[in-house]
Length: 97
Image (cartoon, rainbow, N blue to C red; front, side, top):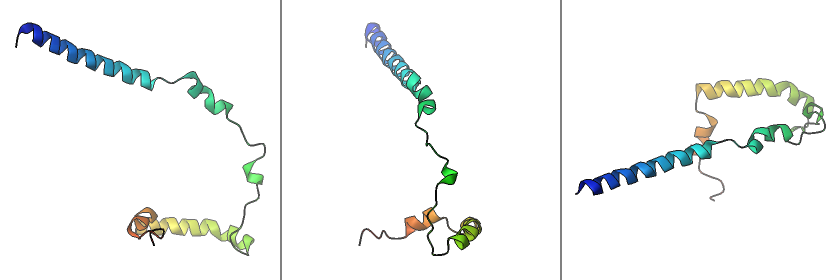
């Protein structure tokens, strides 16, 4: 291989590498739209705290009292044993039947 061909090959590889680096830097650039979008988002007109929550049982007061305790108990059991995502992975899908 001649020195000119070697130089041309090295220059070609360097040029392609430089183009790839510049292309990735341009892809990372944050646009003005991306920067101001969170401030222009449509906000709900009322507080979510005032929205009526639907109960899952015929005893909504009892449900509101016990839900935090049951959530904490579920978190404790999940830390002690299998996580819910690992159980879902191991169980066969109901939609397949």
